[in-house]
Length: 180
View (tube, helix red, strand yellow):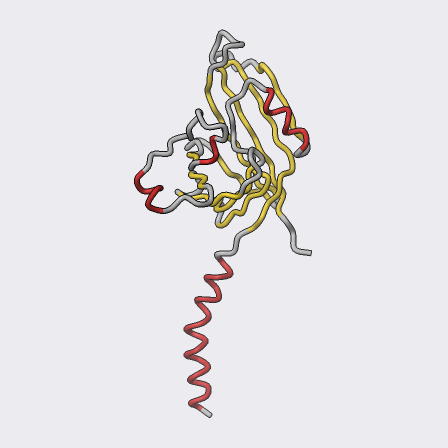
């Protein structure tokens, strides 16, 4: 009987860490809730425009704004506060995310292609700039608060409609998929 308890103890010592690690490495799935774009004069900080997109259908208006193309997450899988997978509204495709949540990689890109190429922001000649790996801004932030994930993408840019530099902030809010 002592041998039985010894076997159970040893088995527990080997399996408990693996179980704990798998539980600690779980990821959560979040779905689009709303987004907003705020544009300011970079020098004066005066707000030039603000747009709120309360649902996926309203995102069509984003295409008409004088704002740089941004990845819009319809869904996101987040593990340990890092984006690991996403589905983009821009083209309705699924992506893996590498480099600690900063490189969106479309399916079909090999590790060799990633290692030998420079994907610093996409190719704007392509109709779909997300058809190649897309580097997210190093300034973007992800904040998890309760069941809400908030992605904030700040950007400084120019647009021919304005004779001053613009500062934009694109914010996407996603809500966690709760188990039923």
